[in-house]
Image 1 (tube, rainbow, N blue to C red):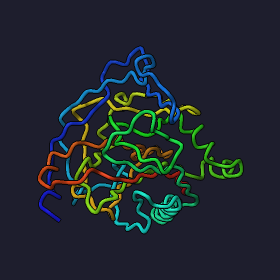
Image 2 (cartoon, one colour; image 1 turned 90 degrees about the vertical axis):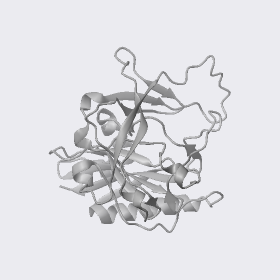
Image 3 (cartoon, rainbow, N blue to C red; image 1 turned 45 degrees about the vertical axis):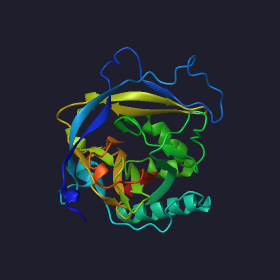
Length: 290
């Protein structure tokens, strides 16, 4: 591993602009193949505020999922996705992720409900299909958290059967929504992920944002810039070093409950002549006993 693995870098991160006092920010994702005239239909009202941010190296830092909202682990995947891979690779990768989560948390119940491949390449509005797990999406823009605390209850009930709800939605259990983020290339240099220390985030800087899909509505948080935020990255991230971070934790006792994150232009990438990023991410509901 090179000397850059220990480096701090300064990079530009897009935050949501501080203008949404009377209007709620939104994205609109049309159905795949829909004929959309973007001159007549506004797909988003969001504007970005790009800020230079210092990114600290995770390597040899004292960080944990419980305290900071993120960490990285050693875990080799046997089912890394690739272009042209059979659809069963997706299912096997999700099952593999569930096994990793069950072992990591000693969980009572896990379900990997979302899987997404991404590349650092553009995707047209017409080609985007959020319902297709084989679809390769472009890198996400803007510092964000994947779900709001106010909408998590309805979301979780859609993932659980009535019997599971009766069992797990009780004071005896702790529910987490946990993300994994892994490079599909041997090393990720291009557009790596940045994550923000939970305890450096002012909750007033979390702006609820609607993501409107053809069949459902999802509310996420976008993050406003605050100079007190502390950001990290994993330099020279290997494909066996997935990031693990929180989108939600039902337990609230001074622990981290979510993790704001976003990819960024790596200022060191020119030194490597790196190929465009390819990554895979999952979201898993994890239930443990308190």
